[in-house]
Length: 203
Figure 1 (cartoon, one colour):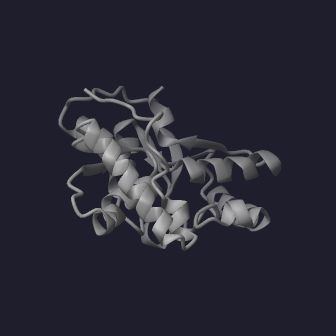
Figure 2 (cartoon, one colour; figure 1 turned 120 degrees about the vertical axis):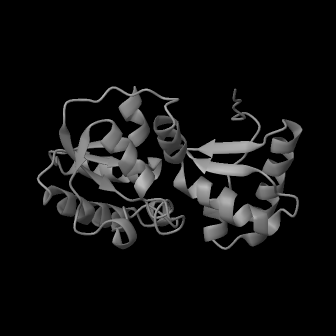
């Protein structure tokens, strides 16, 4: 059983914290915690790597009573598959490459679960030269996309050049922001590659 609190919760505070507004970040954290407690939330599952990192690593530093378990959706999905709770139908083997989001990989150490989900679905993963701990950023994090869109596009384009070298036609990522940045440059530059956010593979 689960609930959604989209009409009550506020931003996790990641953009605010990265911009240096520490007090505002603390206010957002405490406001969210109050909402979670009012609804007896014991666990949070989020599809956003930045939210995951903030909830699991930063909230405990500013919310003294923080006692909520936090899990990224890729971990949830992989555990369900591994334990037999989620039955998946293997697709016809397709070669894909996987882009590691900064907040999910380097910040939170989650590398294997997204790849395990892809393999469980029957995909063959062709790694880019820069992957896992050495992954190349999409260009959108840290407020860059909002403040320096041209720089974001340049970084995204470089990442897509790296993806093209794998010879695959599909790039999968587990971050909505990475998805948006890479998809935008693919459409603008008419690059022949499909960008997919991992959760969409289950639709």
